[in-house]
Image 1 (cartoon, rainbow, N blue to C red):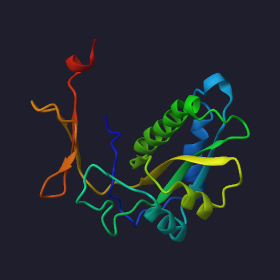
Image 2 (image 1 turned 30 degrees about the vertical axis):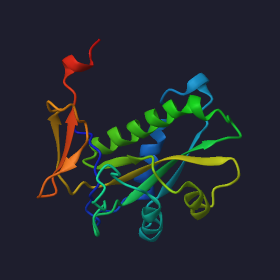
Image 3 (image 1 turned 180 degrees about the vertical axis):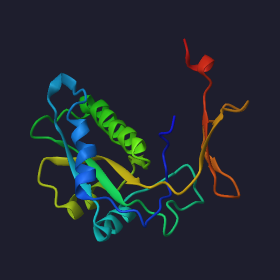
Image 4 (image 1 turned 90 degrees about the vertical axis):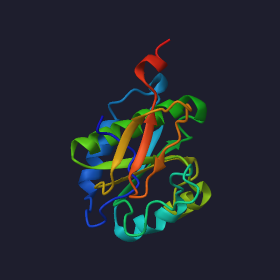
Length: 185
């Protein structure tokens, strides 16, 4: 229940390489389709590199008139989940693995009082070039991490059935969730 998608962070908080390696290490113990384990991880925590990656990501695209994260509220680190195509080129099968790995990272971050956001919308060719990823290593998902500096509130889906998230005049982020009885078949 504490794990939310945060899009605003306290930029004064910084990660160490060891802290990020600890999060990635947990992914080694998660399920992998046919146990092929084709996922690889790029960690970015140096301020300059994080600032280079940030403009290549697109956040909260459902909020068309809002640029997130707001200036001065960017993440402190990124973990880019990649697939090693030399191990397996089956991108469909391993999308589940990517989700499992990202959720594992975020759940562990929440346990440390931190948070993050999975970002599937990013400029893939530019990111691959910036990171100097070798041939056959394809970025699949960007996980932004940091110390949350915004309020996210879960609400029930209204009578109109819309699940669109929104922000109020105080920049509080609301996320409508379906009721339990509406998701049980």
